[in-house]
Length: 405
Image 1 (cartoon, rainbow, N blue to C red):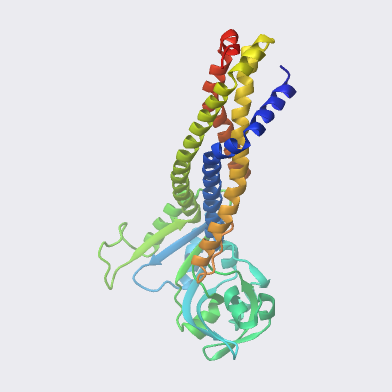
Image 2 (spheres, rainbow, N blue to C red):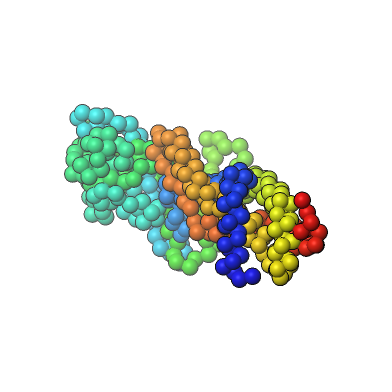
């Protein structure tokens, strides 16, 4: 039997039982839709977290250091000089909170004083205007980068905010740029670190240390070397105190590469769990496919006998029923992919709404790998659950089949 004839017979058989075929593949549709929607949503959440937290910067190292006193810029300079072989640069940041006003609207903000290198290390980009320049850091200029949500509430759009003047504390600042919405720390705005220390916080201490490793540096090794250097520099014991008190100290070094790896592991485990749950539906759908194919074999016994009497081989009969089973699964998979993508978008809207205060948005990410996996699963189910009915049909006796009523 030619391939064209096989496909013609396959589609004719499916069309003859369209209602039953659609009901039969419902389990496949639900299972594939669950796999696609969960995969797309989890990948979307991971991409959002990576973007919001700056985790895309795999060379970034977050250094937490409290040696029992405030860490100053002199300490940062010493660290950068002492570990110049490992780091391209080391920068610092300082936090403060307050309000920002344009004379009409007042917003609560978390202010972050940073050096220009911070934006490269954390992968933070301006969606309007520009980032803070070194000349502004050197001069302690009164410039500010506003969070997108703050800028939009004040002027309606990020572009309109650039060049405007805002009041912070007792000073007026010029808006030079707007950053994207901060999902984790909503309302976060940036000023030069020197401006923060002179005009906002009033001290020379830093709250955060960020290192940017040289390309090709072993990220696991750099964490250990950094901690060892800091303990030696501040003359601290190897172990932090278990009961922090007024004289406590702490050293902690985290690479973004390790955070990304941990995030991948956590998301992967959750995705595997969801896939197993969806797999139950796929198994149920496969059993439904087998049940339908066995029914088809019984209903078409005389047809099978007639085909064998006219010269059809066992392989022809086997392929005919296998193709019917695989086609049903692929049709169910196609509907499942479409439904899964739609479901992922709906779930993403709920996820975005639930984090609206932080400003984090989730966009489903459907990879070709997920679609290919779904298609492969469909073919596998078609072969696995369609083989026995096809094998049974191929071994029917043609004489007995022609006499079947």
